[in-house]
Length: 268
Image (cartoon, rainbow, N blue to C red; front, side, top):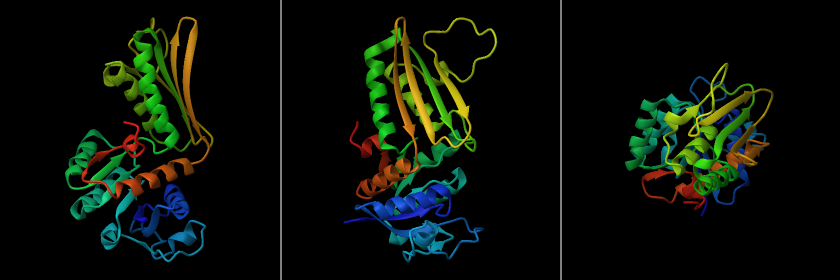
C-alpha cells in the first residue's frame, strides 16, 4: 500500500521536485501540499504547479489542515517553519522527513526532542549515492587509520547560503568518528598566509560556490606516494527528491524514534 505523503514548501524548487518524485514512486502518494500563508499560490493545484498536470491536490497554508490525511510529511523549508511542522507531526504521531539545513544548536535540540512522539528522519543528504559514500568513508577511515591526511572539497551553486555544506560536514563526521576524533576540535575551514605545517589530526574543508553546480563532494585520503579519493557528484536535485520520497515511504511504517538515511537504506 502506498504511503500517503504531504510536502511542505510545495511551490519552491525542491517542493515541486518532491511532488514530481512522488508521482514517479510506486510506494508513495501525494495527498497534501503546504506553502507559507503569504504565498499567492495558495489554492492552486500542486500537480499543475509541478508541471505534471492537475492532480487534485490543492495547496493549503497550514499543515494542521491536512495532517490527519497523511502518513508522513517531507519538509524542505526553513528552520523556523520546520520546527512548527515538526510540532504538528509530533502532536499527531506522523512521520517526518527533514531536509532543511541551517539549524542552530538550540533548534537541533528542539527538533530531536520530538523523536519520542514521532518517527523522525534527519539526513544531511537524501541521495542514495551520498549515503553509500558515507558508509565507504567510515570503512576507508578505519582501514587507513592515522597515516593518511584527510581533506574534504565541496562545490555548490551560487545561491547556497551555508558553508561548508551539510553533506561535507556529514562526511567529515563519518571520518572523524571512525578515527576517534572530535570534528569540532580538528576541523579547519580555511587556510591563508603562513599556516605552518599540517597537523596530522586535522580534517580540512575547502568550499567553492558558483554557477549552477548541484553538488560535488570529494574526500581525499593522502599519504606519501598515494592518494585515495571518494567522490559524489549530483547532476540533478531529483537524486535528493527520490531519496527523500523513499525515506518517507519507509518512515511511514516505523515506530517513534530518530532515524537517518542509512537506516532507510539498511546501511547500519
